[in-house]
Amino acid sequence: MNNYTIAQLDDIEPVKCPCGFSRRAFVNDEGRVASMHLLDVKEPGRTHYHKKLTEIYLVIQGESHIELDGDLIPVKPMTAVLIKPGCRHRALGGCRIIVVPIPAFDPNDEWFD
Image 1 (cartoon, helix red, strand yellow):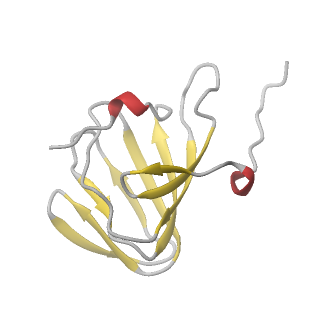
Image 2: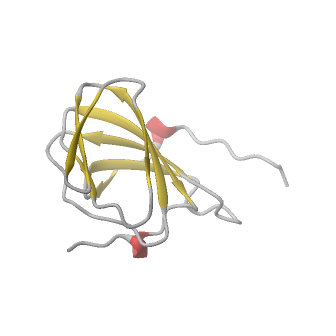
């Protein structure tokens, strides 16, 4: 068994998520230390939060805004954002983001007010 896993993000089927469409890698890996998502945000997302997950966003394309606990933050390529558990957040559209959830993404840890 290898000590590594390879994922080709653009080959992964996108799934609908609160902020757009996400291609999720490493979500089923043993140990579930972290995962990585390619998130395409076309329209304003739905505000949500996580009780356990910390997320790191890295904007790789487009200029837009991310709403964090009600604050509207402008973002552009190479903007990195650390989103702690409990922070209500959403992306507002027109961008592509690499998301690193820590620990690995758990669909049961997505909460809405």
